[in-house]
Image (cartoon, rainbow, N blue to C red; front, top):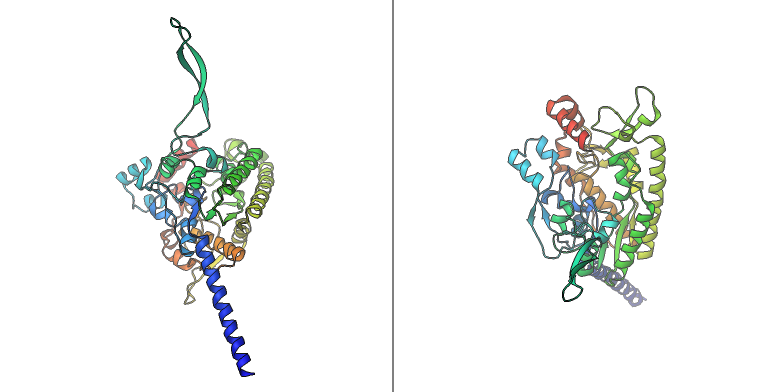
Length: 424
């Protein structure tokens, strides 16, 4: 009897050890070669720029490290500015000039992380580091000898390679489009979300003119179909897009004259609204909400079709907006609940100073939601990022800047608001 019990115990231990080994091996195989297509959230855009210290905190980098792997990417030095460094006096005249020009800190021949600021599923398919649209053509004259004495021409279609934006130039360089990079990398695990800019454009431009459901549906399906055809991808993760009309970039505005189309949501840096195009009214917000629902339903359907994990970041963001997220150290100390805004004195926040993208702490929250989804889907035990540590080393959360007060109460800030108002 005792021998039977002993054998059962040993058998159980063997089963536990074997299962654990298989799970670990499976995770190692899954993350043997992670690949990334993505936008500014994956690229590490922070405070209006992309640079090494912000790229290191982007979610594919954090999640891959926690899973015991890594991704490679071209390191950027801009373009544009890290607002936090400028406002805190850590970036002087030469630093500002260098940041605006932009460039690369170091480069790789073939990045496994191809996520680029400003990208969507359309640009994943057609924008490289050298061409805005690799499929674009134009008409040009082709000269030829029609006979031995008659030199003439005919019109022919030729490639029309227009230079892309600097983020694509510095981020992809000569490696191709995001899709072409993945076809060359042949990843085993894919971070595949590039849906946000299909709808975020409405908040940034305060208009619904940029919404194009047919383009979104066509291009996300085409992207996923081409990725599936690579054959190497064992799994991946997608996430839904949060409510873009609730981000810190937008704030409520009531027209003093009571005009409905002048009231609604305006960019935070505007002190007033002088044209209906500068505000999202309630009808436009309803249009955006409906589009967002359709977009997220498609993202969910693609996650199922690809066998990917799905992180419902819309639900996460709604909860952050309503309840905040507790930050707590292992010893029990807590600076409070982080809210869906940029940090203010005595109030932690998840946004950077642009009111659109996460700060360092926000990226850790984002990464952990993806880790939870991956663990649930594939049965792994990938450890989470320490959100308290991320908050502790996040200079924006530890030493907040009240950007809105700066823009309204200082001459330099008012000048910045005026410049932004002209170009946005």
